[in-house]
Image 1 (cartoon, rainbow, N blue to C red):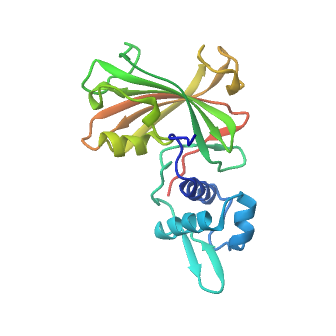
Image 2 (cartoon, helix red, strand yellow):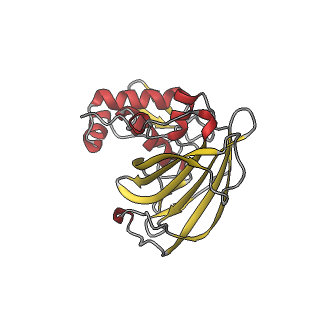
Length: 233
C-alpha cells in the first residue's frame, strides 16, 4: 500500500540534495555525476532523477548546461519543504522522514507557553529519521482553532506543508530555544535513547501568517547521530 504520509520520491531526492548543498557536502560549482550513474547510485529511475533536478533548477540551485552536465549553485534562502528543519546528521545533510506515533486533541497543558485562541490543541508525536537513522523525537502542539480533528492518514511527511495545503496555515517564522531535558517516557525503543536519560532539546514557538503564535513543539535530539544547525546567510 502506498504511504500517504510520504512526499513524492522526486521531492524527497530534491530535498535531500538541497540539504546536502546547505551542509556543504555539495559545493557551489560542483558538477554532479552523469544522470544514469547518479540514478543507479540513488536506486531510482532516470525519469525520477530528472524531475528532482528540474525542481532544483527551478529553485535556482542547479544549472543544467547542454552537453556539459549539471552544476550546483549553492545559494541560501531557496524554497524548501524542510526550510525550518534544523537537524542534520553529524557528517551533514540527511533526508528527513517521519514515523507518526500518535495524534490526539487535548486540553492545553498549563506547562505550555501561551499560543493560539483555543483552549485545546492537537498533540502530534513523531519519530524523525535522517537517511533512515532515528535522530529526533518530536512532540508538536498545534492550536485547536485550525481544525476540529486531524486525521493521521492525511498528515504529510512535512507538517508545515500539510498546514499550508490542508489548513491554510503558513508558518512564517519560528523561535528555537535549546536546552537539556530528559527523554520522555513515551519514547519508542527505536529512538535508542532510554526514557529519562538526558538529551539536547529544542523548544520551538511558531507563528502563522497573521502574526499570531500557532504552534509549540519540543524536539529531543540524539546527539550521537545528529546535530542542531542554524546557518546564517
